Length: 347
Image 1 (spheres, rainbow, N blue to C red):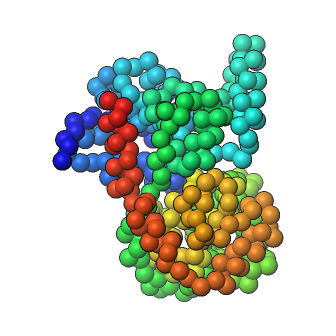
Image 2: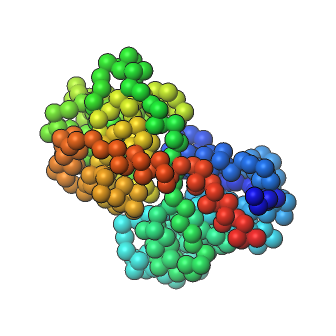
């Protein structure tokens, strides 16, 4: 077996501490499964100074406002910078390029003009390796940000295989329902499209369970008000990824739904599929690369499409084909192995 001797610093945005979402899970699980002989990993602590030259690799999860200054500081360091960008947009390459050109033209005249595309492009351009989760994301980065494909390596999102062992008993004992439709995620994020999902259940005669915490913003209030009008909708606050209630909820559900404007590709949907859920999911963001022909795809901006897709999933017979594919291809150990290969190739 090849021996390695790597010292790695991983940086996750501070928001991951309060938003129980995909970036948090991706970074935590990648670090967990990278932990092996010859690989020393430090987690970024904002209260401790970082000396980049002490590390072989610095791996930043998420290209965005929170990580821009970090990427700028590290780009000139004598160490290798790896970015997991977590980026997708439904806009085309030309729109991305136009936004970045606009920013460059007006920045000299108006301080503080930064488009989201410009921020992500600058972070990716500063990296030695970029690890998108899907080929769709990789194409956007290559074409939209004009980055060499040699720097880009698709590393899929992963899933904890323990969800295969989940049973419905615990959830049923606590809440008294099963065979429902389930959503898990951040319902306060407009991208997750929960308001349209709740609206769709005016025409779906089935229970809907939403696990995730709403905020105090107008969008969250609108969602909660609409959900309150439907006695078949159950709202449950966010739970940790390792909470047995989450695994049991997946196992108790019939169909898992992610009606997001886009997903890359939706870790919760992978988890749900392992626990024997049928999957109804947005068709945007590269989801088909993971779920293939074994999921039901919806148009997130069309409430009739959400209704039709969820109902089709409910009416279908369960098949374990997707569960077998995910078990074989998308374990966090496989993800960590692929990530480690990128690190070694950089050095």
